[in-house]
Image (cartoon, rainbow, N blue to C red):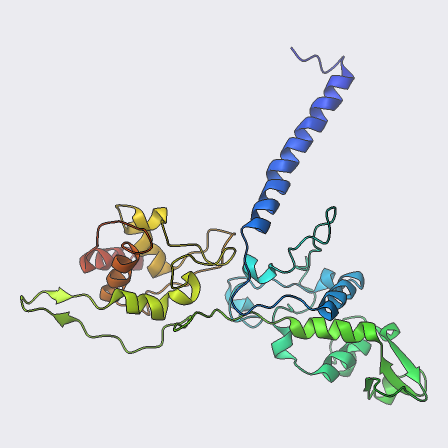
Length: 330
């Protein structure tokens, strides 16, 4: 037996070993998995040197404490972004600084100030950002954000090419022209870069925009399903991609998916109807119950279950209709 009450060295070694084991299981493995299973969204560009310098200033000045960058999948967060945040949005932030240092966290922990996910689209003006940083009350009277005047200087004869701002007299404490420092210009460059990358795929759009195809009966009078491949391209390919491989850290692959290849299609149909937001490794999928008919859903599922290496029985429209009734009755 372990004699912890007498053998203090054994007790200390055991405690330390349990601590290391739990740290690996709870922190190291999930962080490594998230870092490796992540790709940038199409059109998302690597950070420039100026943006990296601006991000570092953003962190060192404490902005990260009050401003978040994590749009949640709830109604009140829709004002901050066009969609909920996903791991791929932070792909370039998750690159290690060096062997010993992980990338800094910029998600924030308090919502004291507005979320900055899409501030580059909401406020594209350099002058607005510079005035806001010099003294937030210049542009937002009710703001409780601290001012950062040390990022600016007063100069009687600004050098050629200097970036200046017009500060109202009641916000000035010296004479001369207010000149923005190179550091604050980098910070503004970083803030303007905060824009959600669009969800794009060749020949596809994230939200379906098409005329609903008519159901065409064959010569025997049986209803034929519409073209599932075309419906997938216009409805699903923007996220799951035309080859069904998805985007790591954003959208799961459909190729050789256990859910798609399940003999029972109920879970798959429910996901398409209701959406899915249970896996933190991927983005939120919206429900398509109001956008797709039972016939269209059946056509898409049959295409997915027999493409990209998948092999599963085709489903009938009636199966979708039955599960829709169950979902609507909940």
